[in-house]
Image (cartoon, rainbow, N blue to C red; front, side, top):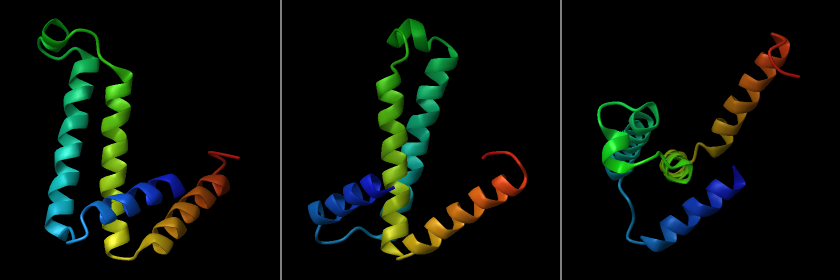
Length: 102
């Protein structure tokens, strides 16, 4: 998480005039669409493999990273980082209680 926050910090410095919430949300949606495209490629939907060759794990990983950064930008903008981390901790604790993880 700290690495993602650091990257978000860099994005906010890159665009000091500010990024509006609507722009962040549309960027998140765009990145989710790009993940869907990569999943289609991995799953061989249509003629993706014929058209683009074998799927690329690094490309999928990059799209996932960009999506996580977009989510973290929203969390940072609305200053809900502590609440987000608490939600994650609470979910992990519940999974431990249920015996799903150690």
